[in-house]
Length: 86
Image (cartoon, rainbow, N blue to C red):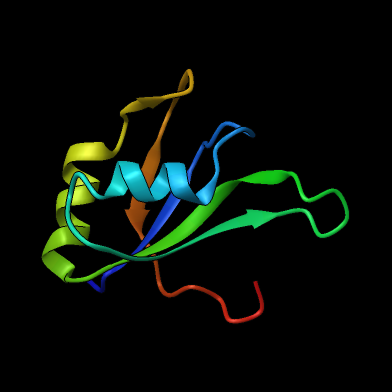
């Protein structure tokens, strides 16, 4: 596993700061990238994040996956890497 996470099922009001705060419960967050529509700027409901270590990424998955945020259950899994063109 690497330290990149996929975070899905996000409420449209969720922003990168919200995600960083949530993920910081599991460790140091290096980067969060909320994926948005290029025209409207509205969230597409998912994001990628990098934790400082693989262990922190695993902890985020184990402790935060399924947690309720803004009325929706977060889906947190291991990701490949944050795409460069996003």
